[in-house]
Image (cartoon, rainbow, N blue to C red; front, side, top):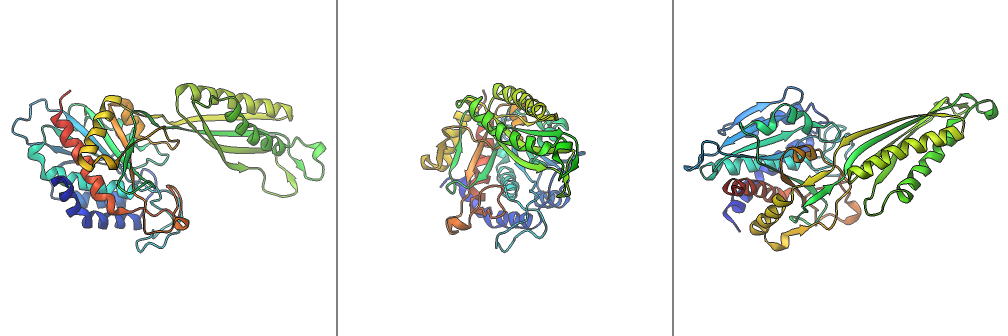
Length: 401
């Protein structure tokens, strides 16, 4: 075991305590006052330059390296951990289960605690840092575009010069302690499709006197699924899931309008352009066939997450050296969940990774996946997460390229 891993494992009890306190008090969106306070308390006493967000309750901490040969124009790297939860009612029997209607169902409580661990490790090794490190504690990843807000507020330039590289790690229900990533496209872009069909309301007993948008909406749901399987290349797939339907309030009334909401995941600009254009064409065609009109709103939420090729090959080598070959997995293909760290990687080269945190002591039938009310993560990976992030910062600042 490397010295850094040993130090990280010595921090594990306090990191687990922080994670569990965060888990019991989850907050959603850009305003996370309790979470921000917990992070600031955890960083208290360390030699850091700390700033907090204006539009969000973000925390940015800059650690200045004190290596004797640190140049005057020393570079900086960025490490990121997101902090927000989801509006999900937790259904686990963990002793630190959520005390409110929200849940850390995506592991951001681990990301926050793991980044605090990386701060402590690098603070102890600041005499070895040939540059500076920016720690990005981010609210609002779950659909609130918190990364873009922090970029606008200057997180990439918090150390002075723009950071030369950025790294982050996200827990998932993979084998415990295994790090997986790939060069190029890692995660899908996220988009939101809302369609409202307008007809003419009437009495439920006299459909001939109305223009009923409900059958048209039902047809549209099926047509959208057929569109992504028949009009889109299987080599550049799209995931489209209709997750919301709304039509009327009274059972004996034909509503004047009916609407749907869908999440659309894409892996390229080409597929994004196709699905945006064809969903509008399809909605308007089906609406017209039923005597209705269609109102289509297609919003691009998060772009595709693309890992830099050079940084990622280097990162994989570093992880192998730190954790061992058996703890590294090169992903065969992208995954369809999205991530707003994509905005950071659009600005600077870097690598995003997945870290397995599956519990081996919980039966399969009691385990959920990310975003499930039943998901239970193994927070004993926090030592690995802290060591991984700290190691990448240390070594990248030794590597000038």
